Image (cartoon, rainbow, N blue to C red; front, side, top):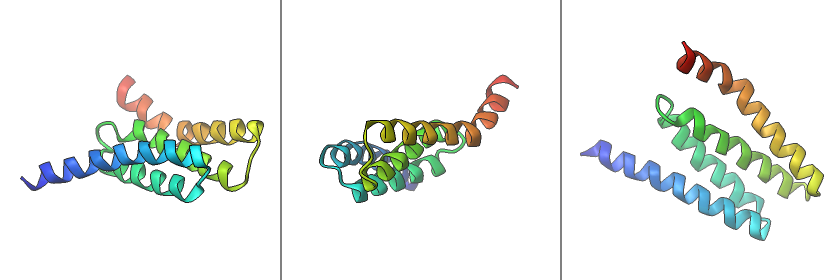
Length: 103
């Protein structure tokens, strides 16, 4: 019973993270993007043995978006920061996924 409540809370956190990301980018509010990254990071931590490594990419991209909004980055600044976030994810998670899925 308690694990069902935990599961529902974590999925709600992930959904709220996505909604906060959209709103934070629309109104350029970096604190909302930081909160979104924390919520998706929480989900990723608890789902580490299933889809957590994949949702961790969302956390990295949200963090990059928070940095871009906080620094008032231009279009190229956004692209560079989001690519750096994705590259950090590949560096951190890529070998784990390759080993787990490819053997």
